[in-house]
Image (cartoon, rainbow, N blue to C red; front, side, top):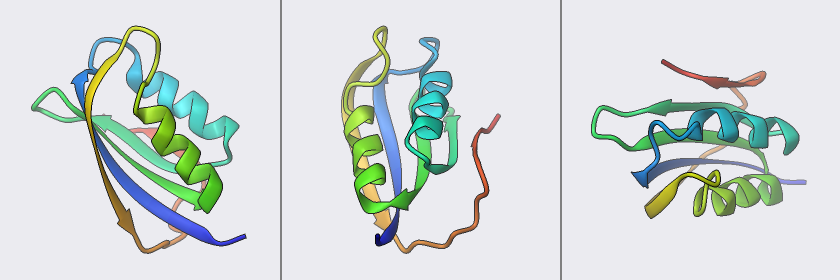
Amino acid sequence: MAKTRAKVIVKGIVQGVNFRYYTQRQAIRANITGWVRNLPDGSVAAVFEGDEQDVEAMVQWCRRGPPSARVTELIVQPEEYRGEFSSFSVKY
């Protein structure tokens, strides 16, 4: 299975709605490594690494997010797989 990496920026009502917690939980279930964090402008950034189909599933999940989130825009930037993470973490 081919490995890939994607960086995403999620905009909308995505802070104060447990977006990071749900993203981490979803990533762990999907065997994704990387990180998620809030950005000063009110958006959320994340990096996902793993099998292509699992990373794509995480990107699709980010289009809607957790129940209380309202995603208005998702920016996806494919990147070269680096294999630099051993787990998925919430960055502060």
